[in-house]
Length: 309
Image (cartoon, rainbow, N blue to C red; front, side, top):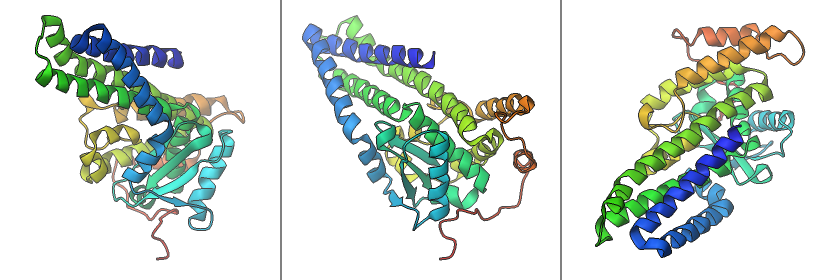
């Protein structure tokens, strides 16, 4: 159902781009817009991961440089029945993580030093399982394509405002309404994929409450600590597990409180099963969740990349 919904929304976004082209250049403009959209998505398909990782100055790590973190991702990938992705660390104080790549065979996951410093082992595991959920669901390609087309719609709208000499009512409406429509479609697709990745993380790690605890902590710190990459490139905010510096009304992610509530429901349903397929509901996770409602003493993560330096 999510796949069908995403396909329909992607088609709507492409059609919106063609409407913009038609409003600016008639039938030829619509065809040109379709060709441009295809070309941009083709470029994105092959180069998005390189662009994203370079933008964040991400450093690739392996079992020798960061054994605990790398081994964690390796084990989670095996549990998810995925090829081993490349693993990166971003030297940035804001706690966050993202995934990129055109398919599971060419994927990468990354976490910031801020996230590795702040969260517990189980919480980091939940976050990385979420990112692998995006890889498994092929969200990394879908969301990059969506961002590309939505950005192109806005670009055409700006072009139309200044260079279209014969604006009819339809053209004027297209120029002003299309970017908002593109933003709404982008948010609808992205929010659906986030819930799907949270569900996948619960399945992969078996610890939905650890992910819920991580989301709460990340959300609070993401508001307080600036993210230079997101400030320079606002579109990058949709990459993160918790978007940085974006008001909820314009966010591509569901409200963190709603995601936490959904994960808590998953834990109750999974835990009540009592079988080997039920999700973990152990005392450590319950303890982590209890700290969501109150202040807890900060502790050094087991995966702190600065440990031992």
